[in-house]
Length: 166
Image (cartoon, rainbow, N blue to C red; front, side, top):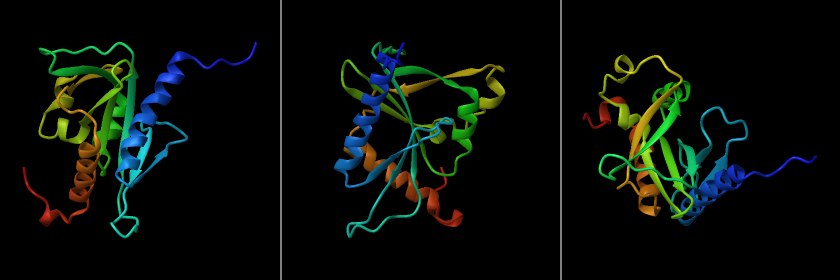
């Protein structure tokens, strides 16, 4: 019996393609992470003259044919692995969690570090293998959102005394 391409493989590839197209439309590049340890894609940006810029943006993708919405349809609950979350919140560059709805051909995003910034989340989460996060339904992934991710990266690259203090 030969190996099979499952529906899950197709859905995962569609989510990558959706993100790649938006990034490419901005004139930037996306690299697929070959060994997935909790991060799927790396976005790199370039200046108007085509020169590569410092830093990167990390993406973790989740894809589904059965999108669930909670909180009066204002958020999409997603279960993520605790160990992945620890990696993401400690990453110095922005980590963006993307949820792709195959049926609607639409994706939603969450800036992971911002979501958990200032929250005493570690103390409130029970020791478990997964954690639930809520991706705002208003955060539709489009070219404008992709450009905003570059600005998040730029803020990470500023000297500590130049950063905006929340």
